Amino acid sequence: MGILDENRHLEDLDKKYIWHPFTQMKEWLEEKTIIISESRDCFIKDIYGRWYLDGVSSLWVNIHGHRKKEIDDAIKNQLDDIAHSTLLGLSNIPAIKLAERLIKLVNSSLDTPRPRSASPAIGSMAGAKRGRRHSSLNKVFYSDNGSTAVEIALKMAFQYWKHKGINERHKFLSLNNAYHGDTIGAVSVGGIDIFHKAFGPLLFKTYKAPSPYCYRCAFDKSYPDCKFVCLNRMEKILKSHSKKIVAVIIEPIVQAAGGMITSPSGYLKGVRELCTKYNVLMIADEVATGFSRTGKLFACEHEDVVPDIMCLSKGITGGYMPLAVTLTTDEIYNAFLGEFKDLKTFFHGHSYTGNPLACAAALACLDLFEKEDTLKNLQPKIEILEKWLKEVLNLKHIGDVRNKGLMAGIELVRDKKTKEPYDWAEKIGWRVAYHARDNGVFIRPLGNVIVIMPPLSISEQNLNQLLKIIKDSIVTVTEG
Ligand SMILES: *Cc1c(COP(=O)(O)O)cnc(C)c1O
Image (cartoon, rainbow, N blue to C red; front, side, top):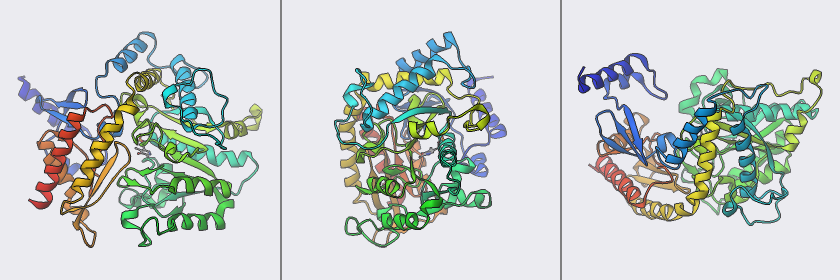
């Protein structure tokens, strides 16, 4: 078979055998398939040799670029020892090392009042804030994707109250426009109708607080004159029902899949204060925001917030291997301690929990943050992005631009004055993405919101190129 025939054969096989996620397969079957075969830095290459700028970090996971030597080597080296063992009844070296590293890192970043070790995990990242009250996050529960990290958080929080002898707490408070993953528990605390409605009868009921979506404020107010009506609404729910509520679950600072909705300054801190005031747990889902995506190592840092449970995944291995962690406090962990016969055990685990290859990749990824001063080098790129966002806000069909760090959304609207959205069926976001693709940029929209989320390691030159092509694509599709 010639190379062209072979490529076409691969396309046929894809269409014959693969059911793609979040994809209308009828359309997929009619469209040209892009098959990726290679990558380097912030570029990915298809089987025909065309290179694309990876504008979504291979679905929000890539941090230091593709084919990063240090991470490649870490995985190869680990492979010489062992690829996988289990954490059920055994432990392994990379999982132990990574757990220690993460705990030190999270606590120095969030500046919890933990006795400092002589050598903080990443010295330059340690915050200098003082006077924190909240407990540190001292325990790591491993899993392999963001959804399971959230499931674990929900089950852990629920069972915690039971172990404390409190049995009436079985509800969660979550937000409209929230996205916490696609497993049933995670969908139950989700708030995106288009994804979640179909499964309604399967889901457990939650209390829903309004989304801090200022551009389309549910109360028709504007910040800061609104005095946080959305938080007041959350407080109302807590005031009436806190005795039934296990936890508030939130994506700190950015509701990502909901459309890159950035919360106004002070909102997250307000949520933490409400959780403390009404004595419910706070679960921070940092699956999308963690590992410097928002310009700080963790999004909670922006408002000096320490949650009771924190979920991390996407960026944890730099986009190399599936891995997730659910971090929690001694208080919660200790509640599960007891005699074997007491059945206080946390009965949860996955086959690939604490996979050594993934943990080795994560350790190398953390080393790179230090070695390359990723956070500091990010700042000029955030400035470039923010300057550009301000400019494109003048375009005829851009209603709103939002970002935190290198995580941005551009909301396209049919009518800027009335904020009338494009119909979902018009696929305006996709049309922009296809145009960009034809010009060498891979992006993936969220409905009418264009997402910009390149690897943090992207060069300023490549970032400018990415932004230029996205702008051209928006102009051509919406004004052309
Ligand atoms: C992507 C995401 C998840 C789900 O992670 P998966 O690895 O896709 O299961 C959960 N929470 C947030 C905030 C996410 O962005």
